Amino acid sequence: MNAEQLIHLLRQQLHQVEQDVLIHDKQLAPKQRKSLENVERFNHNVFSQQGAALRPCVEQLRQDLNQLEKQIKLNLAKSTIELSCQRIQDRFTALKRALLTTNINLKSVAQAKASNRARYAKKQQTSMQQSEFGWLAGNIMKNSHQLYDELNKHLNWAKKFEFKIQQMESNLDLCHAADKIKLQNDILLMHRRLGKCRKAISYIEERIQYFERPRRSDYR
Image (cartoon, rainbow, N blue to C red):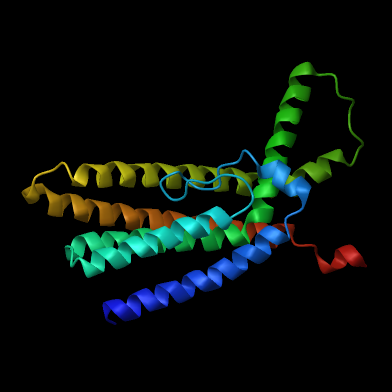
């Protein structure tokens, strides 16, 4: 695949994801926008955006593609172009995942609020003893709580990897030519670790969706 074909393919992908984002943002209810208005769904190294709407991410991706096209026309170093391609791929991956996980983010926010209320109630020790079946509901939700805890843990790891990548990329222009290749290899290695972490996040999110999917017996 030559450079022209690569740019064409990436712009096709951008067009498709833009259509998905427009549908996603249009379907957001005011209450959902309110719940996520102060939530950073991405590390700032991936997207400078917070809240439920994802349209700003599309514009940032468009700028990345324009920059990549300029780099190719200027015949910049292969390593520079590879890093730009990796950055674009990371952003595509993060945006597509965000499209699929808005509901999980909403539930995570609600879960955090519920956990805070529960901790406060426990400290105050003023809540009444629940019914004899209260323990059963607690056991049913136990695995869900653990999944959300695991999800938050991996999300924190991903943010640390992204921050480390940002630091190393910032140092590229400052280091000597002899050290640049090693640093670029370290960046690519960190990207691979980030990729594995994101795969784990996707798996956990799938398990949450499966766990919280209404069972057929619930409707009998």
